Length: 124
Image (cartoon, rainbow, N blue to C red):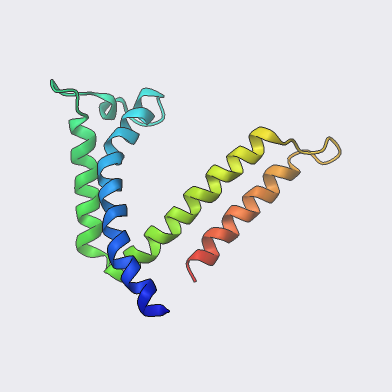
């Protein structure tokens, strides 16, 4: 079973990395438009592409790929995907449910605990 899992990772990890490289500049653009990161990431070149965001993301990803061993990158990509899914699902729970009035922020505390433990367990 471990060989099948390893073979699956060999095929899926490059796809995840490629999607990350493609989407990162657009994510930075959206965050800059919302004022969450510096405006320079929200600037588009003459062809409508976020050139500064692409260069920034490319340099950071290249540095990580150069200096961090593959085994760690693989683990962190898997942990990051799990964290993204749990945060997304937690957001949906928060939008649809409320904490009881007798215990304010109980739901938020439980979801924070769940997300933290999901992330930590994904690293083991």
